[in-house]
Length: 388
Figure: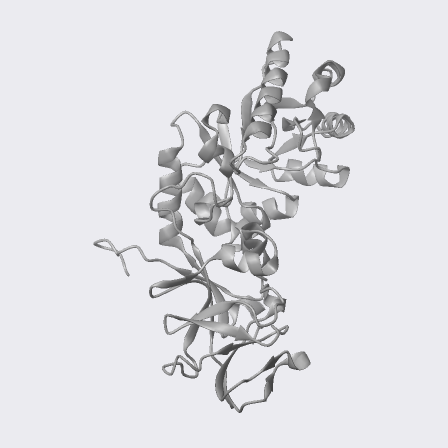
């Protein structure tokens, strides 16, 4: 018989995506966002590991008007799923991407004059008129037309008549910390570009600057559209940005206990013998490791077993980790453990794992590998006439 994809087969480690909480989060974000401001849902990198198609569908149903990805391949997945909403390519397309941008009906980012010229030339040859948004470099210094050089690039862009400029945008370098001084300077620079374009008789179209942090803390920068990725997933971009009541994480990472070892004092656990038992210990083995996206740490971190914290012991291996359940006598083979998320009154947050990894929440969410099956759950009560 045909072999299904590996992620469709059962495994004793998996990622749960709570569709009910995702819907609630989008509703909370939509209610917080001013009615006149559009929402662009960033679903790049499989919507930070949550599944681009499922997140996109819920985002659109909740009032988002645009989706955003990084590669034409990511856009192709959305189109293949039947999604016809506008899709914005967040990075400058290269010439090999142009036919796909046309085929997939993508709105293109243009942040380099050479890219604009090449895209215009392709459009003239093909008869396609690309819709583009101009990317402005206001201080991030990765991509974009420099904010202070409008007189140099604006006439060149205006001459490229095969392109339909429908928007102008920039990106904050640091919008989610207490010190908003540079973010406000970026907004000021962005506004000077908009003013210069308007003065030259060039309508900017849709103006956008805010990411999740900007949406939360910089209302003066909302403009016409906000680009949000991590916030509807129930994770905040920093510890200090504004909180929205009711917002909660959508993702939970789980594994089942697949072995339990009783070890004696002086015995070690795992590669490198990094843990030595000081007394008789009971060690549970979970079939999830650094090849699945968990940080490769030694004797650091916890998971939840029977609603209690169990410390990791030894080094996390490629496909397994060991946890000490000596003080959790209820732990049994096949019991469900939570690696990220809530179990009972306890929670392992994505920020806690990010601290172990010496990284950020974005990295952890997007880092859970595809070999972990994604399982949809829904904690919304069934309504009359529906099947629970």
